[in-house]
Image (cartoon, rainbow, N blue to C red; front, side, top):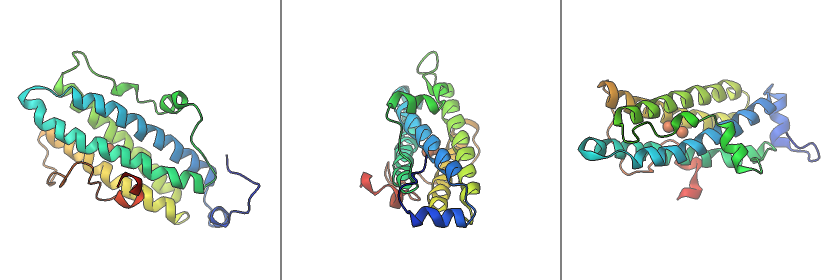
Length: 192
Ligand SMILES: [Fe+2]
Ligand SMILES: [Fe+2]
């Protein structure tokens, strides 16, 4: 996947550090596909949070949704710096995410099931980003910086849904505004 025709010092040093660049790149592209697809599905899930109870959940899903878009954006430059690129076919990109479980429940406005789907997505994202942290720790500081910041937001998202579903206190205040992305803003500056 990495290009051999250029002398890319930014990649060479990673190999000298003992980093598995191909694995890191594969992980970044896969995680980007999950974030991108989760952003789409969270849009639909948020839309179906109806009624008085749905109103509060809607805001929390909105915060998580916009941060998933930030997570997708945060991957793009690093993928290319490492010599990779996104798939040409968007359908292939969405399919590789394995996020079909995020499709609307039956009935589509079942709030409890919507929140459970969100929780499952956040817990999957924690596993994905923790894996990237382990692959890059001490060997690829630039990727590690992105992965650990995304991981922190995913841990916060998990705690929001644990609080909503089970009443487990998260200790968090709401974001100051949707899309605040306190840990990944610097990695997704294209979003403003
Ligand atoms: Fe995310
Ligand atoms: Fe998330």
